[in-house]
Image (cartoon, rainbow over all chains, first blue to last red; front, side):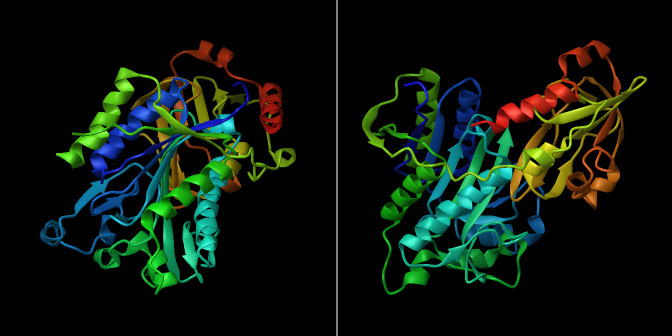
Amino acid sequence: MAGLRRLEVWRMRELINYAEALHLQSQLVERRRRGGADVLLSLQHPPTFTVGKRRTVHNMLASPQELHAIGAELHMTERGGDITYHGPGQPVLYPILGLREMRVGVRAYVEGLEDVMVEVCKMHGVDARGRMEKETGVWVQGLRKIGAIGVRVSSGSITSHGLAFNVDPNLAHFDHIVPCGIRDKEVTSLRKEVSPVVPDVEEVTEQLIQCLAKQFGFAAVVDMEPPSFS
Amino acid sequence: MALRSAAAQAATLLRLSGRPAVTQSLWVPLARRSISTTQFASDEVREGLHYAESHEWVKVEGDIGTIGVTDHAQMLLGELVFVELPDTGTSVTGAEKFGSVESVKAVSDIYSPISGEVVEINSTLSDSPETINSSPYDEGWLIKVKLSDKSQLKKLMDNKNYSELLTAEAAH
């Protein structure tokens, strides 16, 4: 299959704890570094707040007790970007791709991730944009953030972390942070934008996956059977 | 507990390195890649520097190497908002990560072209990381290293070879 670019898609059926997802990503990055496949991890996290490399913890407004009360964890990460929230109803995609082989630079990659979310919004009649200067992510009317990006490039040119798209998460959880360090704008979700229609999280997740594969020119999308658990 | 086991079992799957369980191949039409192309014609490549494939440069004066990222690198990265550099006195190793930069919500590792001891770092970058974008070969230098092994320079490229690399990378 020389020349045919192949993307392995791993759909995790259950909520994945953030630390476990980090561990899995580091293994997939190492596998990629040794010549393994480009992989797309598709999953959702239990309520989790994460902070990027710049350690902007000052944007966490809740005390450890408050976080504990809502059952949320806080993680420090090595990705770019500020503080954000992940939770059920928010599909998260972690592409583990070799940018050098793809001839894609970091900025172009991040713009591609924006375009994936913009495209999916469009499919639901929501006019969203990326390319907001200094405010990477996907915005509705430039005021309400619907999709977030935070990426790491390591081991040469291999990506990890990725994007998070608000289909129907608990938006109240975003009140515990200054999301992405931006005070004067809102966080929104697809559900809020297309109300009274209730979007199906699984369906939108599939759309994100297919749009990402197309965006980065993958000709063959191979579904990996996720491990089964008894 | 289901929460823990899902990813842990997936990680085990990697260690076992079995064949992928292909349940269904979805053939996405080979899409025309809508990837932004970089302006190679305007990439500056300076004479007198040594270049690494990972787009760092080193300028050697006596025992001291000044290291930075190339014009091509800063263009691939986008506007930088954060730079992480090692402390003076730490050692760096050729072809290994010595720091990182952040741009457009992406943290990228940077690799040292040579090995040695860090003798100076560019502290202006903590307030103005975008200097790397505007002046990658001059004001945007990253660290100065006392070289421990000058023979490593032979493994690096000169400006002509690096320019050829950029041309080759541009050809899809």
